[in-house]
Every structure is written in structure tokens, then in C-alpha cells.
Length: 155
Image (cartoon, rainbow, N blue to C red; front, top):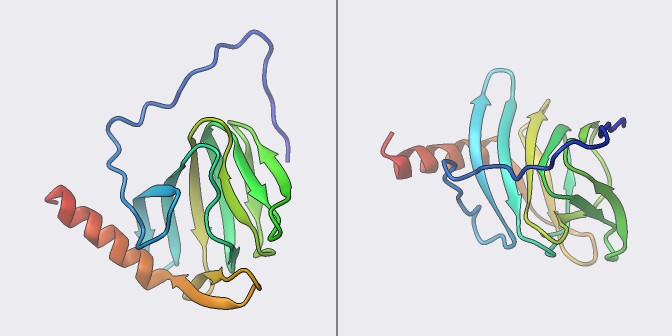
């Protein structure tokens, strides 16, 4: 992964005033805004805002995931809580399905754009502390979230 930061560049905060954020079920420490779903191609795009200094639920990505850090630090944690990686603003990653982890933000809220490229319906496994699967998030969950958001906006 390559990251470039030119010396002397000013830093700006991402203006999300026109984004309507929504919770996803009972999950804590983040909100999301669905952007688009291409059902035939199984592409799902959304943006997440992580709460400062918090971590979300333990999970595993089951599909190829591209991310772009729009604001803050995107932090990834091992299942045991150890910090695994810090992705600064501007970091782009393209990752195959991976290992269990948690995600979160540094000292300020973190905004990350996600683009999922699926070859199956299940996209995430939700894990308990013993790394046992307690649920999945799939295409239908994201379709439902997008439809809920459209209804809430009156679209």
C-alpha cells in the first residue's frame, strides 16, 4: 500500500453535513450511509463513520473489499485487541477476504468509503469473543439498509 503526503499541504476535515447517517441494526460505535448497490454484479458501496477511540464488533470480511480513508485514522485491531494497523487519511486498500478483526477510529471520528465486490451473498461474518460465527451480513441486509434509508429520506 502506497501513501503520499506532500509537505506543507493543509489539512481539512471532511464535510459530512449533507450525509444522513444511519445505524445498522444494534451495532455500536459507527453509523453508515448506503451509496449504491449493483445487484447483478454484487457490488455494494457505502460510507462509514466510526466513533472516536472506539472499536466495532469482531468480524471477518468474506468478499473482496476496497477502502478509502476520507477522514481521520482507520484503525484495525487483532481479535485480542492489539492494534494491527493504522491507515491514515488518503489510504486506499484493496483486500481479499481476510482474518477476524475489529475496526475503529483514532482520536477523531474516522470516515471510510467501502466498496464490496462479492461473488456470494454473505459478505461479513459477525464473530463472538471466541471467534465463533454468530451471524452474517449479506446482500439482502445491505439492500434492506438502502431501502430503509430511501424511505427515511422520502425518496
